[in-house]
Image (cartoon, rainbow, N blue to C red; front, side, top):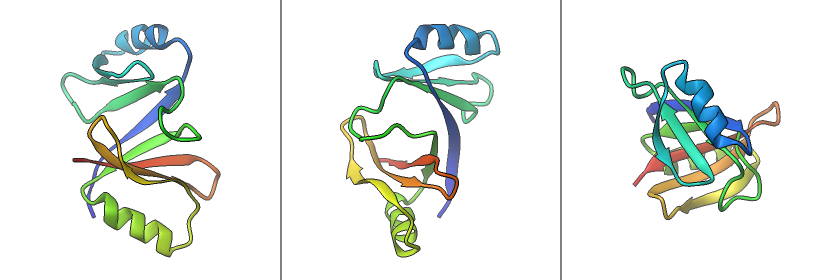
Length: 115
């Protein structure tokens, strides 16, 4: 399994204020679904941060996203290890397949792959 990118997720009700703040550091908006916005470096596109009000389909909001090349294998590995799956593996309408798992420190990790 290959990791493609890792992004922190900043929780905020004021996405525009955060977009402006991170914009002063050079980030530009590359995606905005209304409830989540992703900002990226124009020179290093994998350097990203997401701003989220609350997750659209999950009961909890994640703290970090990890994009992998084989999300099904990642899901199997976490399930087989007995990790707490807090959102089941599923295809989402915005083009990703994902699940949430809780890390040993209690943080929620969104593990995803693009379809």
